[in-house]
Image (cartoon, rainbow, N blue to C red):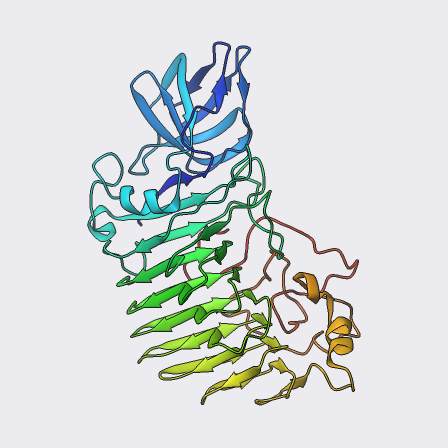
Length: 418
């Protein structure tokens, strides 16, 4: 079984998260560590992938109990060696950007191999928000080059608390500029993934601020890529794609929110499929774009998606099953706006769609219990709520009307319990 390695990413930088005092650490024979602060102060935005350095030893947190108790592993995933009480040099995030992590996680200080198959590891890149001044990660990221397979792959995610991190670093289903990691870039793409046999992305917020032709997420010529619990934004009045899938392979897109700022007269596509591959988009919400979901080539399968308030909700020859749209297109379709005033119907379906809150308003909403069971593929919604009635859209309705945020996203089929 492949070993898991963990390296953290934080726009705060790689500075020491400990200051003052005389901190020490004890590591037992199983790699379990106890930190004694000794008068030091500590930033608590730590968890999986954070580097702990003592003597000449460099270790990484693989799970955390609290701010002073955690499990440590080596750069290659073995338990850290036993260590009597010794001074801690630093506790720090390993990379200041996801781009730095992509360039560095296979170097001689980490996996030391471009092939994750040969190294026999799963590379977990864990993304934290900047706890200091909330600066976004602002460098374009291109994943292209590492050799992966179905069991040894790259896994990118934001931690959700519990054994993953002290603080939750994932969005709560709505865009956040403060207490959630976000990737905001002014470039032709924000996140580009190509030539991977296997890669998983969970819980990111991505925005492209470029005012000319651009993409937010560009996926091309991969074997298998999963994108889960994602929020995707960009300027509306420019030619761009929010999520573009091209070439070969299969992409699974679940619990993703794509929201534009207006229905542009330009060529703006929410979900766009072009190539010889397959895009399966399940329980996604797309609003305020010119073209909600479009197939140019290849195969585009939509299930349980809420695609509304777009210039054209669906375009091209695609499969839409148990989806909600303004025109009730597809099989087992739901008309999300049957009344005289579309905005009134949208307001009845969502908590606050105009401000990016696409949680379901109640059991009387047309989206409630209107989807089909996809639990063979995934089991939870965008914020980790277990799906039971299988509502349409990125959110599962919860009875008290306050989305319950829990650790884990319930992805089956190769995820790392995020």
